[in-house]
Length: 215
Ligand SMILES: N[C@@H](CCC(=O)N[C@@H](CS)C(=O)NCC(=O)O)C(=O)O
Image 1 (cartoon, rainbow, N blue to C red):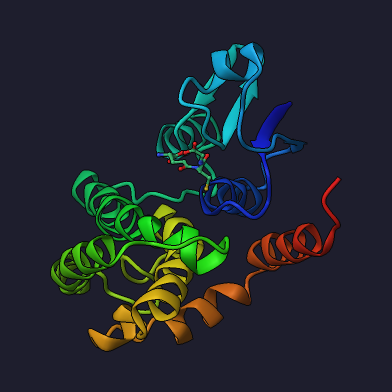
Image 2: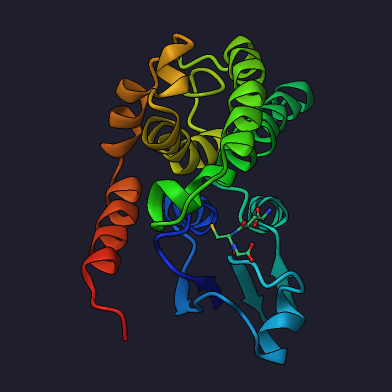
């Protein structure tokens, strides 16, 4: 059986968990908290990031590599279109979501979610980058009704996990939700995905994990 390692507040963990649940893949969860310092976990995830997967064959980190493995090992139901170009468009959208939006907004999380502060210079740089990247994302994303079109795909696992963080972090630190400010009305889309049983399980587990007192 697969073991998904990490914790259910992480967006990248929840992206993979949503895919596993959507596909009905049997898996167990192993709580691995940050920072990762033990050698066995670093062997599995050399940059000390979560999620990572334990498999009979070995361990695997990087959420998109994990998604590709899951798709290949458990093809039904598919979370990528069969058509190669359409599948590449899904992967393209995931890159825009994670590399060009989430990873940029991540620089704000220390202040937005963890009581830290982010310098004015960093705030200005993040704002500049997002004001360029968000409209670019908007040119690709379809929300019709799913992120890449009519079918629920891996792009929705990524968008569902990451877009709310981009919105919340920019609102908290920069004073406005830059997704909404750019005319990307992602909230009805998040509500739509939230109705799916797999997404409800992800949200319930995240809530339970947030409510649990730190050990
Ligand atoms: N590119 C990685 C990003 C994973 C990631 O950044 N995970 C965060 C938690 S949401 C983490 O482990 N942060 C700890 C660190 O960067 O040291 C992936 O897709 O798996």
